[in-house]
Image (cartoon, rainbow, N blue to C red):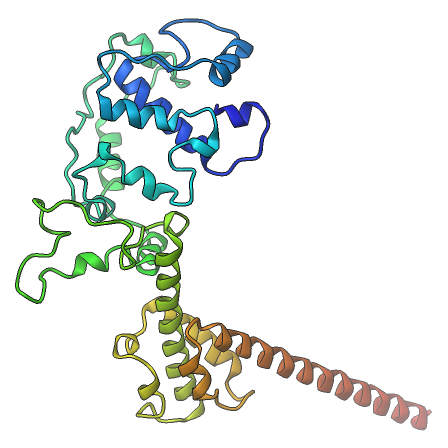
Length: 330
C-alpha cells in the first residue's frame, strides 16, 4: 500500500502510481521494493518500511528507469510522478516511454514485444503457481478447449463499441494521409510520438485528459448533440430540414454521431406536440450546448406539471359529478 493509505490520508489516484512503481521495480529487481525475496515480515514492519525506508537500486536499473521508478515511489504524494496537474500525461511524457506512439497503442495497433505461450509454465517451480490455485484436480479436455476458442473470438461487446464511439479514440486513426500526400504520424512507425499537450490530442479516458483537450472534446460532442436534436425536432414538428438551421452550424457537425442522434431523438420525442420550436439563435450562440438541454428540461417540466394539474382537476370534477348523480338518484 502507498504511504498515504497506511497513514489514513485522503487520496485519489496517487496510490495507483505508487503501485505502478512497485510493479516496475519488482519486474526489474525480482523482488518487492520494501521486502527481500522469501522474507517473512509482520504487517507493521512492512508498513514502517513503506513509510520510512528508501528502496535499494543496483546495476540492473539504468539511469532513466531508475528516475522513473523513484519518481513513482516518492513518499510525498504531492511530489510523486503523475500526481500533479498533468496527471497521466506526465507519466506518458517520461523519457522511459520515448518512442511509444500512444495513439497506436490505445488502438491496439502495436505488436507486443513478447507474446507468452499459453501452454508454457513461466515459473521456476510449479509450487509458485499451485499455491495460488483454489481449484484442484481439474482436467482440461478437448471440449473445454473448443469452447474457450469460441468464447475468445475477438468480438467486443456493444457497450465497449459505444464507448469507443463516444470517446472518439479512433478518430485520429481514420485519417491516413496529410494534405501534401505524406503518411500521417500515427501510421508512420518511424515517426516519434505526437505531443500529448497538443489541444487536438486527447486521451481515450476522460479523467486522464487535460482540461484544454477535455473542453474541446466536450464542446465538439455537445455541438453534435445539438445538431441531432435540431434535426429530429424539425422532423417531429413539420419544419423542413433545409436552410432553416444549416447556416448556424459548421459543416463538420452536419452528420451527428449515433450517441448524439439518440440524445436528440429522446429530447425531440419528449417535446413533440408539447412546446413550440426551439429558437435557432440559442443553437447558434451557445457553444457548450447547455442552453439547449436546460431549455428542454424546463419546458418539459412546465408542460408535465401543467398536464398533471389539468388531469387532477379533471379527475376531481368527474368524481364530484359522479357523487352528485349518485346522491340525486338516492
